[in-house]
Image (cartoon, rainbow, N blue to C red; front, side, top):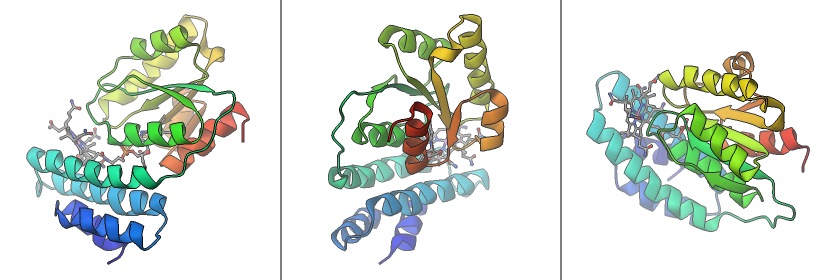
Length: 209
Ligand code: B12
């Protein structure tokens, strides 16, 4: 059993994904690799099947439930860093209901010592602005997993500028439909394509190690 088997089991929505996750963890395989190369890539494969009309909405629902059950097993074994002066992050998914990636980034930022305020899903640009102002955030982190959310992110940047607070926050963006090039053009301060990249970018943006 290896990570490829896990990727396949997720893409094919097979319950054995949970047994494979457990076996890989027991064997001491790096939990981040199990997550990114097994579960996340498996979900992307499932999305590709959906696009080819080989999988349908109920499959996406079942697949995301199965992925979450595997992710819970992984989260239990992740080492947690002690935080001193905690930097504050406001995070959420712009516009859509997709929350698995956002939840993962939220978890990884938390275990790396950030104070994370998770606003949930289906958000509008103003939700990010208001919460960031309320708690005095250092970073606004936005998950964009659905094409219509791209322009909503650009709207958020406009709002921050119009309200005269753009320089108060570092804005970090990521998610399946984003790219580094797009993020730069849209006016983000940072972009990352996976959880490790998200933590690295957040630390770099604030100059903390
Ligand atoms: C599972 C799933 C669903 C589930 C979501 C369940 C849930 N609780 O999240 C359900 C069934 C609800 C769903 C619904 C829909 N979905 Co859907 N879904 C998916 C699927 C298969 C997996 C998503 C996922 O969880 N991926 C795994 C996570 C971990 O990956 P991720 O989000 O990219 O996150 C990683 C990185 O991007 C990054 N990251 C993520 N966020 C952030 C944030 C920051 C700040 C940073 C730095 C990094 C970062 O780190 C994460 C870890 O590596 C994708 C396929 C895909 N390619 O993503 C389609 C997909 C996203 N869905 C899609 C569509 C079209 C829909 C629907 C519109 C379908 C419909 N006709 O109704 C609806 C929309 C509903 C709504 N209003 O939001 C399309 C979007 C296409 C597009 N270009 O917009 C996709 C790409 C499928 C496809 N190929 O067509 N979906």
